[in-house]
Image 1 (cartoon, one colour):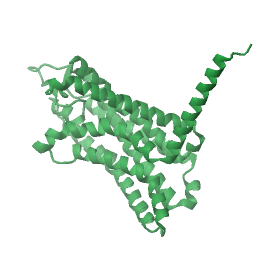
Image 2 (cartoon, helix red, strand yellow):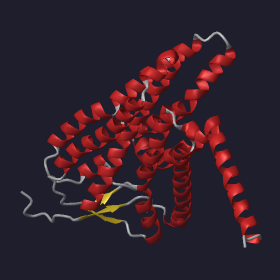
Image 3 (tube, helix red, strand yellow):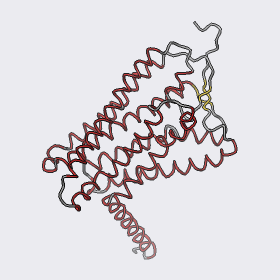
Image 4 (spheres, helix red, strand yellow):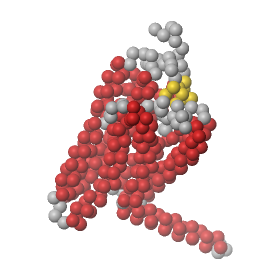
Length: 323
């Protein structure tokens, strides 16, 4: 019973409001990050679709990851940019639910997608002779679709329970986006059931794909170390080094935020670590893959050369029109 309490319909995302003198600077920094993130991931996706040499399982998954990163960062950054620019930090309860659902679903999908990518690299390095027969186009589609569907289904279950919660105040969330734990703390309903359900689902959601990813890389590294030549080891490791860096950055910051004890020091750094996996990781992914991958750089070079030739041809056509 909440007879003497007022049901709130809006939350206040405090974000970085404790740094009023840095609001414009933060806005510009996050705006640049958002532009770079969207541009980089759009470029990777376009290259994977357009270049025939990139029509392989590894780049199919990379294209999916780039699409995911564009959606992932767009659930957080536009709202944060608007808040920094206007100073309006309010968000409706339903809007907060929607942001959490999209963010949670895409984060879960990324865990599964990274696991699928690690399995692809495992087959390519540990079972090279059977790779083409095992990693078929159908299996690629199944792994990608399963990653997306699993991530969104898990969050639907949590949202069904969250929709039953009542919020009576306070209404301030000390974060820059709507995350699960900060929202749950503001509820005046009994949260024991949703806490148990979320714990069970989270135990399946992140640890399972993480363990699969780590198992794949243990096998990959063991196989690489058995390669007799230094050149062979270097070439084998180069095919999965970019993905390993992405996995390390993503899971490293994710575990720091959600698994480490909530000491006073870590509480103060929680927003900083959250910025890493919600904002910086989606920006770094296309940079890591484009700078460390010869095939992506070659596809980009051919695209730029082709675009330059087309523009040159158009310029000549304008100067010498056909009669």
